Image (cartoon, one colour):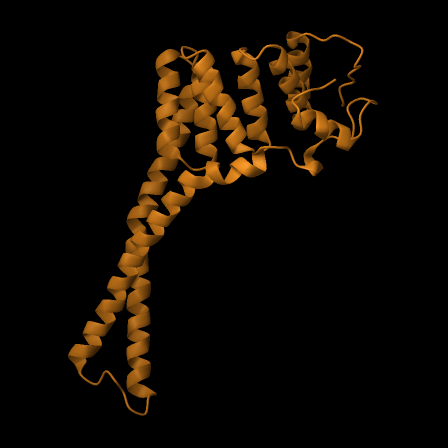
Length: 240
């Protein structure tokens, strides 16, 4: 269901927020962002509007903008748990589990009895445990793969090559263990790269999140605007 917006109507921020909330409930996230953005233009220091838009950006997987609104919510109202909860949701979505847990913990300290925060913390704790277990297993997996490769190469060198290079048993064992050791080191290089990629995920989304892509903008808002017009108004943060 689309929200019909008459440019002649003078909608206040609260009315726009309510229409945006309705769009979110109906799954019209792109239109909701337009509504929240116009409401924020009217009331830029409204922490609730930034919180709602953060959630909507998250639903669209526009993580950088979701985090930006979450941080703005915290800046405007640092004693409100919702801002930290929004921040944690974005961090968890991009795999920054440690940061997400810290943000959830801050939210829990501000709102100790909130079940949603507690459930989210449990989910992140479980994910952290699984990730830690996988991280502990990975070096052994890489080492085993390296060991198998070393053994296969040694066998092929001894049985197939016209002039084997590893004729000495000591050299064969040393070569096999060296390849296994390389596998062990490769696992840590992989884990380091993965952590760096997770930490850079938000940076990688910044450019693509600056503007909603053309295929994400509604064809029209009510019966008033075309896709190009809606995109133009979004870029300017206006909904006339």
